[in-house]
Length: 85
Image (cartoon, rainbow, N blue to C red; front, side, top):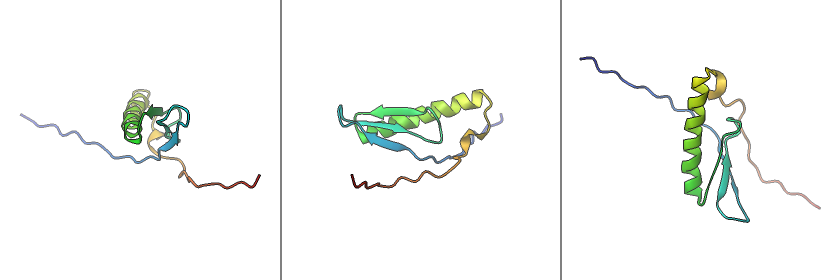
């Protein structure tokens, strides 16, 4: 009997969490995966939900034979911005 090994690659993406000031919780996106968005009542829940959404996103891209979605095209820089108004 032959044993078949399943190999998985690890891919790293930047997730952007935005607090929902009205209802609480967080909305989260992954800029490198356009349309991959989720939310959660807590940071931890939002993190778990976006991981699940990203896995589903990648599975769909594989089914559609899209080859370059794994590579994050550009590094996202997140920085505070001060405006004098």
